Image (cartoon, rainbow, N blue to C red; front, side, top):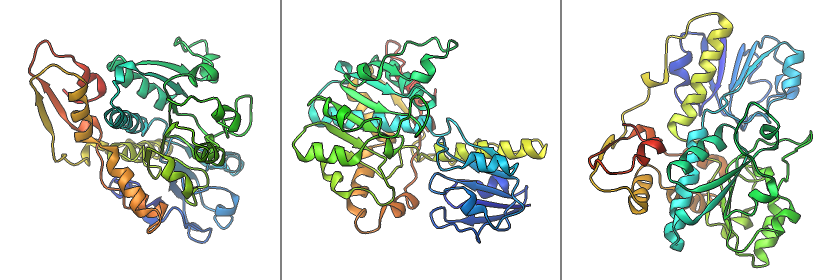
Length: 372
């Protein structure tokens, strides 16, 4: 069996080596000829899997994307060819939630406000929005959820608000998939009209898909002097992004919010298990077999947990300012894809064991995801 996989899938060789012959590829430049002999094709979000890519392939039986989003996959075409498809829902949800938290910690320090005073509107309450909600709850930060599809699901007992109400919060954090059809399309969900209603003090965070926000309308608004604070990890037309927008942002990154080692590797593990199921074999490997020990693996807290300690703890594991600096320095020299391809290793909170030595201290670090 010929297994073709994106070279940026961590531990792909380790997971799939026993299942077939492996070939790694560059996801952005993949051609039809490259995958002509693939029985299994494993991609990330930069590879569009459609009839054009697969026109020379006659053997394909399984396609997997090691990502949450599936807008780059022509599922109808795969279904017509009887090719099994599997995505990795939730694989990097924790990573994205920790990206958002790091951004909020950095902005709170930069502008001298307390996180406890914020209201956060989470637009999209699936895996990623839910993980962010859990972390905000651990810190007693007020937040609301907006998700029209889940609001209609009687099995989901959470309270939901309208998009208009979510857009009135101090922070608006976007976590929806990209859809262009149906009753609630998300393409340009924040168009010029909705952007114009945002207030001077607000913070807008987009860490889902660039096309959710009309980037040209956003640039025009900022050029006219609107003080809205922007945190952008995703952009329209990646990798050919609207460079003029960068200077108007507080934090800018190259679609790496979900790029923790654990987040990317979970996607690999999910696809490994899905392929094992299709082949009717028992999985013999798990992610814990491959994750390295972090440089700092344990810390001890001997004081009450407060925002100063939160600031130190979050930035010790992940300081988003590093990625912002790399992006601004390299985007015009190396380009968008190079920044993603050479992204330095980043761990999640769970990689660090936190011991609380004060019996009265808040358990917030463990609720945030740090190990006990």
